[in-house]
Length: 143
Image (tube, rainbow, N blue to C red; front, side, top):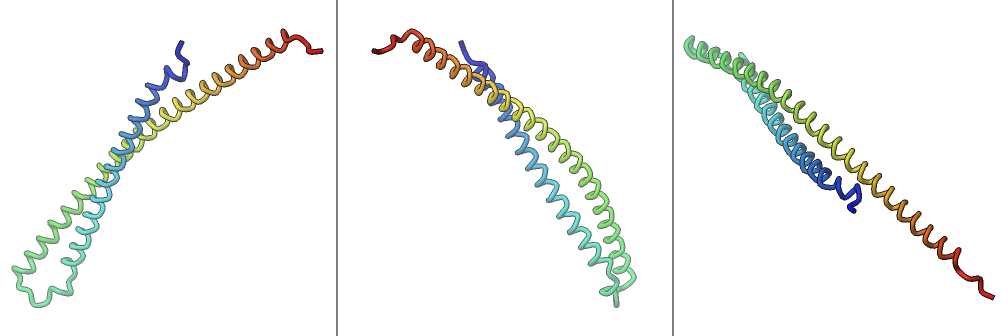
């Protein structure tokens, strides 16, 4: 008859695979988030550079207007990127939750299997000790 721990091992293996998949997805989501945050920082840097009135001297009215329109486009891009970061943050939180759940299930199954193996080991030790005790009981005393 198969031991309880051996019967649970396939479920534990599957839980481990799910946990590994979840951690990979979490890492991918963290990379996407970091990339989006870098892009937002770059956009803010561009905005600061182009909105700075220091380099505006000597520009024609048309050039100044084009510059203002460009800054407005950068502002819209910043808003869009900020919204994208919020969306990615929600996805990151989801991925983190999935990983946490998968990891907890994996750990729980591992703990149950460890406990079953320990119980089996102790039962085996008791059987061995009972066998020894029984043999000792029927042993003839030597003279």
